[in-house]
Amino acid sequence: MAKPLVAIVGRPNVGKSALFNRIIRSRVSIVDDSPGITRDRIYGDAEWCGRTFAVVDTGGIETDPPNDISAKMRVQAELAIAQADVLVFVVDSRCGITSEDQEVANILRRARKPVVVAANKVDDPRHFDYGLYALGLGEPIAVSAVHGIGIGDLLDAIADGFPEKAALDEAEDERIRIAVIGRPNVGKSSIVNRILGEERSIVSDLPGTTRDAIDSSFEFEGEQYAIVDTAGIRKHSKVSESVERYSVLRALRAVDRCDVAVTVLDGTEDPATQDTKIAGYAHDAGKAAVIAVNKWDIVERKDATAREYESKVRDLLQFMPYAPVVFVSAITGRRISKLLETICTCAGQHRRRVQTSLVNKVIEDAVLRNPPPDEKGKQIRILYAAQVSAKPPRFVVFSNYPEYIHFSYKRFLENVLRDSFEFVGTPIEIALKRRE
Ligand code: GDP
Ligand code: GDP
Image (cartoon, rainbow, N blue to C red; front, side, top):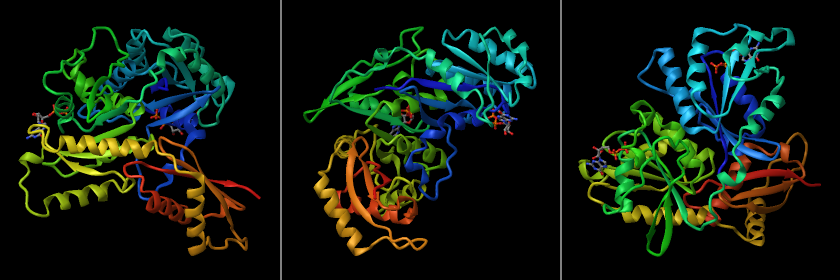
């Protein structure tokens, strides 16, 4: 099921990222503890009263070129309005309303979306500033992100703004959902167009609709696919240039709804940090991942060119060694069908379920070969393992002392599962649980 998206907006220093962290705290997934990545998190899942939703801290969205704060806030607010279901407007209760707050409020008032005002830094009820009612955006909710005060009330108000569940449900279908993501100009829309075929007309935005959930379907070698809404498809719509160019939220949203995320790189340039972030969304969201290196037609190639490029990609995307790299050209169409085949393989691995008896056999053998070292005088035993869900494959490993099992040993178990069952193109997750 697609999740509602909540966007946190406001001027700098009001506590957006503190509030973001507070809201997603309970849901930091185990894939995050991969060593060697320091990506700032601006996007995460949270749950309140049984509803899962996604949260984005718009303060963390990069919006080059504007260095000017007010331009930046405007872009962030516009993005939030275009993509989110509920907007959380954070103000600093201790400062009263500043002109920057006013500016954001003016944009939000026009949004026709639920807005919840979070009056932050009310560490003590006396700090609450009644002047905030003057924003004209409903009742401000007093919170302290740092001290965790008022968060339940805030989440209640946020949840009130969620669309009905039914409105978000994707039709139950077996199509493999693909999201094509990447920096501007790497060739995302060219790839999408190439995949869909020239003769196909692409659905365009209806003016005034902001919830874009139109997917383009196609068939390839007997398999049904859908390309979920991405920046590229809507290139020629009326959305303003700035919003179009920095369509991070749109990419995140597309990733949320997909099975396989294809991160497109421009083969004429070295992969860059921004690519790490973009591919990282797919990894964090537990999606299957493929890296498409595009524009390979104009790259001057020698024997080792592709291998060298791939090793640069591997260096940068160390957290997703499982993602296949495919060299393509959207312009000539070369290896686009290879790309589709790879997508198909990865989707299959992503939804794969391995029999419990096989999982146990493999884990048992591995533990015999390499038992977990004793820790703090405790003899650690691995008792039982099973795959508990798919998309992506999640495993639970039971132990008498799960808390003493080292990260490196968990990594070892993960590698064992990968070596035995492959899982090409998909992250896998392992949770350690206690059993006496
Ligand atoms: P952002 O720029 O809006 O993302 O703001 P940050 O989350 O980085 O917070 C800015 C500053 O305000 C930091 O020094 C935080 O520690 C502080 N801050 C955030 N929330 C609270 C709060 O509830 N109470 C107090 N006293 N300080 C807070
Ligand atoms: P997007 O912003 O990522 O959607 O990128 P576009 O699909 O709009 O492509 C950006 C530019 O790169 C356009 O000028 C395309 O013609 C060009 N381009 C896209 N794919 C290829 C390719 O495979 N080879 C070459 N030579 N140019 C490409």
